[in-house]
Length: 258
Image 1: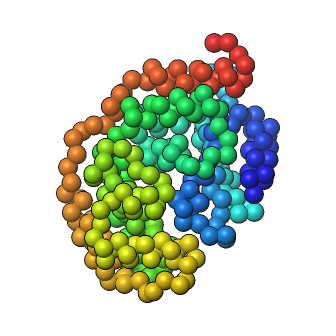
Image 2: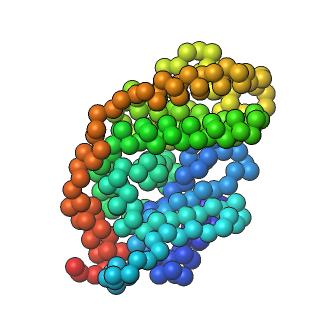
Image 3: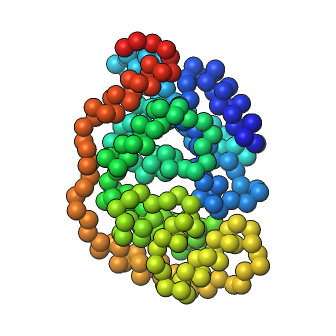
């Protein structure tokens, strides 16, 4: 599959006249929750030639394609990504934190990662994951079933919220690493471990006590909703360093002088 991913990225560069700067896995495979049947959720950052940016017209800065051969591929233009980085966008930070990287310009991506501590907002990320937990738990309750995938979509952002409550660092993507970094009581820890194993296709585990899981989620949502954080948004609101990365990427990608 990696050969298909790389050839697809190469074809995208040719067809759309772009340079891919970074490509990673961002779905269940990045979280350590995949099975052999799971799709490959490839996310990438690209840059267009300089003339594309020298226009007063708004232009499409996203490339997205239907799932084909288990390959779900979606990309953002670098200027969009840099703007979202200034906003401490958790989705972008997850991409840059992925342990499964297919392609990267080492200099540009190293600069992006170096800036994460300066652009990252604990408060922004906390409420992003908390609201995601609420939305996804609402889906579970409306559907009225006990589908493992739906509960994993609740548990993972909840664990990320709990991580951010205790740590001033961006949470790990891998769900077991998240769980191990949070001090949960043994009964709920066991239930979550069973959910994770069942999501990965291990049917040997005993039954999951969804009543315990539901009560835990409800109590933590109520508690965390009253959590207060200092207004740390935009630890560094300056765009200077982001502009420098953008210019560096244009120079390196298209071999031009600015």
